[in-house]
Image (tube, rainbow, N blue to C red):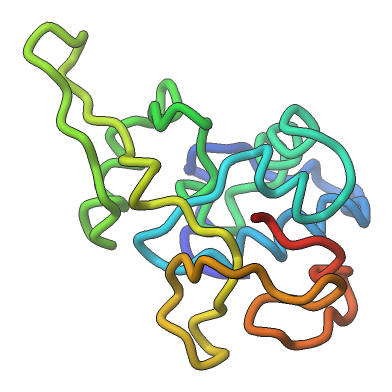
Length: 161
């Protein structure tokens, strides 16, 4: 697991004394792979795993997401997580995540994520020799980001295209 393990993130902390479900571990593993400055939607993660849907991924993030870079899992329209906008915005600015500035009429003038530029398709893992951006080509079916075979945790079942 990575940064922001304080339990004060955009999501909750795991219930004490409870073992984390295997699906939750898989969601968190994918979240850990998202490079700084990039995002995936709840639906992207569900599609990549080939299991569940956006609501199931959202539930995992709500319960266990504070142990991973939760701000990199977003709504498909790029709006920031309610009640956590300012913390998420700090992370986006620090990582250079592409944003779309809010209009003067927008409530609170909170920007949105520029989904066209920030969305990561999982095609290249930054540690696998790529630049961590969208590649235009999805990894081979049954293989994880960067073309490595999906191992324990089942990360490589289906790539998002």
